[in-house]
Image (cartoon, rainbow, N blue to C red; front, side, top):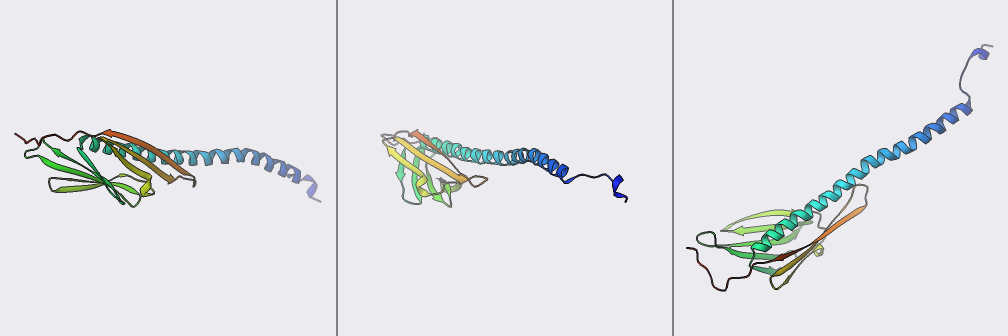
Length: 175
């Protein structure tokens, strides 16, 4: 027979090699999965933080300009209003915040023209935002949430406090 001089692997040798490969591949597969999943999750968190920073900036800016805030009802949260005395003649400005399709929308009207902008995304429900006025101090609480990569929900929240400027006691006319 010619089989005596042929060399090959025994079944035991093959099983040992497969076991060693399995021990090497298991951690490598886990590391590969983590290197893809963890950055995606962090990106989702950064998106939420960016949304909250953007809405904080807009509300703070509008609130500092505003002389008045009028509360709204669903889907509107309320409207800031003020008179810009730097223009001649003075111009009345309004900014309305409202909920639409999981977004916080900002509608600005000034001198007959208006513009609309989504200032925050991932607002799942109307109740995820609240505007509360006490005197000239406005407090806005916001929660943004989303389903992260991998299916786990993540949520971030912030609170903005703005001191609005007081109404003038007497109407001031531009020079």
